[in-house]
Length: 191
Image (cartoon, rainbow, N blue to C red; front, side, top):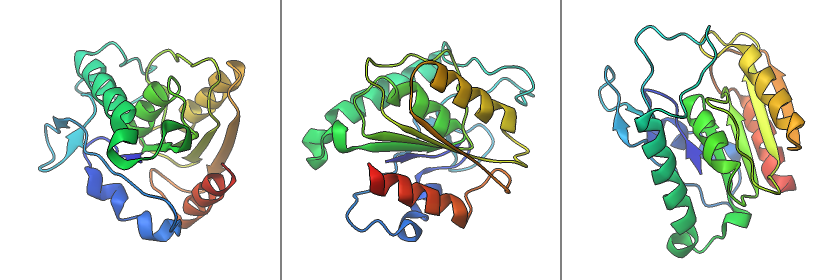
């Protein structure tokens, strides 16, 4: 399952599924619950303050819209096995940008097989389950939206808390290039 970024929708990441070449995986791409304020058909997991640009540390976990998204996503993931027949222990949760922040927020508290964070960040202090799943973090060295330093901070914080982190910086911006798809495929195949 993959969570899209701010202003995108489920179709944004769904288009990448054929390029992952993971035929034995069922892939789900939910829409975030809130409409984006400026992008027609765009969605968001939570709003950003006007003019926010990641130069100040992100701390969005306490916002009412983030809390609602967290609750909805957690409930949906917990009901997933009854819907599709796949237990959480065999579920990999991925997210791009704001979707990556949500994947970290929710996924570290559930017994998932793994997390994939693409151009993401920790948007609030991290809460981790007793035996956290492995995490793949991939970030662009020239990301103009979410600074590389936030990916490095995410890696350091997760490692400090005992999470197994596979970390990769790629020569790219705020995007998902073929090299990232290769890393995702390899991560999924070893879980």
